[in-house]
Amino acid sequence: KAGVTQTPRYLIKTRGQQVTLSCSPISGHRSVSWYQQTPGQGLQFLFEYFSETQRNKGNFPGRFSGRQFSNSRSEMNVSTLELGDSALYLCASTWDNNFNYGYTFGSGTRLTVV
Amino acid sequence: TQLLEQSPQFLSIQEGENLTVYCNSSSVFSSLQWYRQEPGEGPVLLVTVVTGGEVKKLKRLTFQFGDARKDSSLHITAAQTGDTGLYLCALHTDKLIFGTGTRLQVFP
Image 1: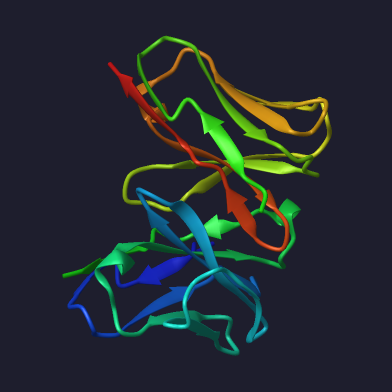
Image 2: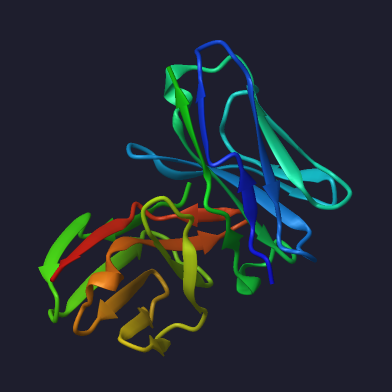
């Protein structure tokens, strides 16, 4: 079965711009979570969507937002980009937000803000 | 906020050596997962441990969940260059909380 697909793989943006990242989960998975990975902070949870509803949100400013569509595909948006937003953004899907099912991660989008 | 501390932070070894990485928490957790992440890729689930004292084996990898359910270890026997990567433990509350990670480099 196809894995979790994230697009684009790489992105370079300028401070102040906004960016949209896309995640297509494994077919049948209804939960999509987003994570930010940086060398200093490690992997940090951004938010989780289930059946088009945000179920959980991490401690990130309101510039970070997301949404989920009826086909479970998800997008995250970052507005007014800052240099510190440079990171690997990962999405993960699972059938439900149940630990024992395990999470499948995409390969990530590497965002560089200059 | 529950924190997962992993040790060591970095590990550099030769092929054929054995190694153990640790994941510790100040709180009890119900279950724990281990992931491996290779450069440029997302983490890949290796195992889920759910019972205190549980031991699971995945080829040369042995995972143990502490009796008190506050710690876990991953032991690799006869490391290979393909084992190189970032090893992450994670627990689940209403989201995945990842440990600080152990970066393993195996040299030929």
